Amino acid sequence: MSTNVARLVGSVLADLGVGHAFGVVGSGNFEVTNALRERGVPYLAARHEGGAASMADGYARLADRPGVLTVHQGCGLTNAVTGITEAAKSRTPMIVLAAETAAGAVSSNFRIDQAALAASVGAVAERVHGPGTAVADVTRAWRTAVHGRRTVVLNLPLDVQAAGVDDVPTVTAPPAPGPVRPDPAAVEALAGRIAASRRPVFVAGRGGRGAGPEIAALAERSGALLATSAVANGLFRGDRFDLGISGGFSSPLTAELVSGADLIVGFGCALNMWTMRHGSLIGPETVVVQVDDDPAALGAHRPVHLGVHGDCAATARDVLAALDGPDGPGGAARSGYRTDEVAARLADGPWWNLHPTDDLAGHGRVDPRELSRALDRLLPAERVVAVDSGNFMGYPSAYLRVPDERGFVFTQAFQSIGLGLPSGIGAALAQPDRLAVVGTGDGGFLMAVAELDTAVRLGRPMLVVVYDDAAYGAEVHHFTDGADLGAVTFPDTDLAALARGHGALGVTVRSVADLDPVAAWARDPHGVMVVDAKVADDGGSWWLAEAFRGH
Image (cartoon, rainbow, N blue to C red):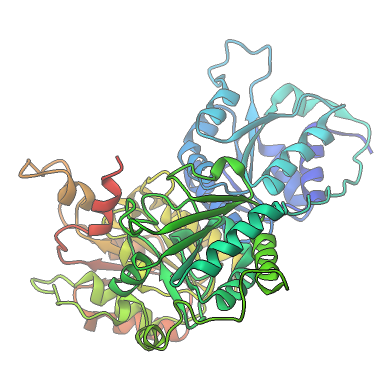
């Protein structure tokens, strides 16, 4: 059947198995978007391309298939750049279908160097070159996104989109490459390091999210405690030696135990300044090992005593076999850091929720810690939490516990505010059986407020918690030193009324007692509820102060 390249692109992507698509449709991407829809790829129309990009990002982080963003040429792509940058820096498997001016349209006002723009933010630039190469071009982009864990901008020139194609072939997804097996010498070296340690800690990051059972089995055999970076939050939930998040969001107990390790092994974890608090969680005599299937990641953020190039699951299995082998260094299984004393301390939980704090409430303002602690109690355990950036961000990250690694979206790689609400929409679609919870500040919420309409239109239950200090809190607390605050503080805004204007439920919270309507809603969630929480001044979050040391 005769068709054109635009429709062929949609057909090929559907055959390859992309997940949900998001976008804003213009003349340049109208036909390819409809081709996706006709082939059964679900599509959600956003109100802004930046929001659509973060929706695709949030979806792809928690789904088993890549998210798709579809945008108009030129301005459609530039509107989406911040969300694309966050996805690219987070190695999110995502495909951006970007219409592009025709090669000969040099005077078009839509014309920009889209390939250079994509490359400049860390995405992979690809292009559909013509009818004869379209299938190969699209398949290459899909393979790079899925197997290479990259964000790919696939440029679709308008003249190429319109070119005729005689038939639409059925395309089969190319098989995934096998996992990178570590060198046997590296396996023996890591096994030896583990056997020699008395207090090992394993920290899993984004690259270790698919290897939770294997890492946990090696940790049990090695006597190691388990922790994650923020983006892998929830990976070891339920393990009695789970420390939770290592780094800026660590509870005092977690920080104490990580800093007491004599061996830290990062599995798919960069061990960067956030996860290791600028190295302060690594003792002067601590041995540091890093495992990653990307050789460029080894030692990229700090010196390591041993770098192991290998898939995290395969490496954990091989090291476990080496420890248990007849010639291995492991001997009998040992307690290591898993002592009765540590178990007793962890029984009370390494979570901030259980850590007592002074109540900052007063003058019509709720303590953000008490607010978050109460929300953790009253919301269903089966939840997915998306967190925006800002001074507030540690409260939902550290207090709102998630059931596993597919329950948390943390868009902090580019440190832009305004990504929390749309990424939460994408997360809700990736995990439809869980309650979607968004933690955002008033600044980020107002930047993304157009997508509140999208959330309401979607019709799924969602709780949006706005930590509202009527300011850009990071600037107020961390960059002023007695300076004029007029540029970063604002009059109080009735965000609950704004939410109701969009068709959502809106509640203003000035004390924990004001959460009763939220508790009632949580027993039978329906629609979107926005909580305008007027939060007390925390004097500046110490986790953000740590992060700003790296600026």
